Amino acid sequence: MPRSITCKCGEDVPVNDGGRATCRACGAVVEAPTGVQEGEPKLPRRGDDRSEPADRPKSIKKSGGGAWPVAIVVVVIGVLALVLLLSCLGAAFFRIARGPARDDVAGTQVRMLTMACSAYEMKNGQRPQNLEQLLAREDGGPFVEGRDELFDPWGQFYKYDAGGARNNGVQPDIWAQAPDGRIIGNWPGGR
Image (cartoon, rainbow, N blue to C red; front, side, top):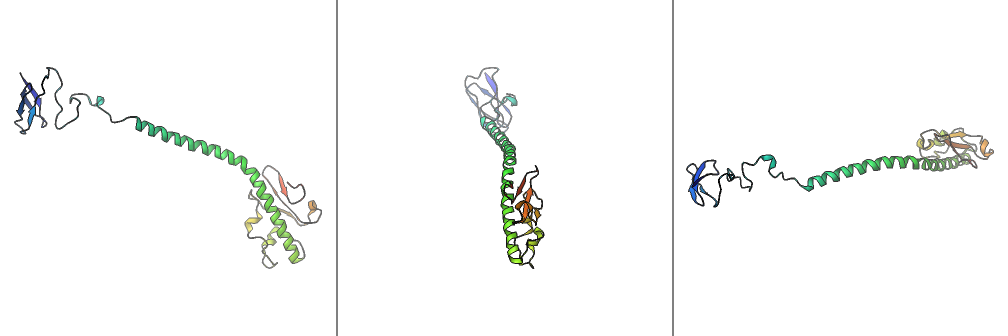
């Protein structure tokens, strides 16, 4: 009994069970598979060489996805979460560690300014009236490299007392005050 098989050009070609026929529209040879039963789906249309029947809904056809796209998305989300976590923890860690480090920098700079004042005094026979005199070229200086060295780690100008009351007059008092009120100075116990 002849069956109607759809040619790749879209034309229906009558073919006997297990036989061959030539399409009148395009001249292609169409072959009917043996054992095709009534009600079975037709062969794919127009060069569609997939093994799925042509009349199957597109939503059921193979999507081409798989585990790789999901794995990539999971890895990207994990990396972003890690970056966010490290940035939060890093900021908290550096906020904690920054306090003692700034204290150390202030202590070192106070000692350096004290030595610069001693060099000024040896060269000029008197102590500088303020720390800015350490920058002056006419007094044999400069005794410090730049104006930035006159500022503490918190951005404030170092405090200076030429009389040196806290040092019993032996050297001028130089100190910095942290935002929480701690004083870092050049006298004994000044930290």
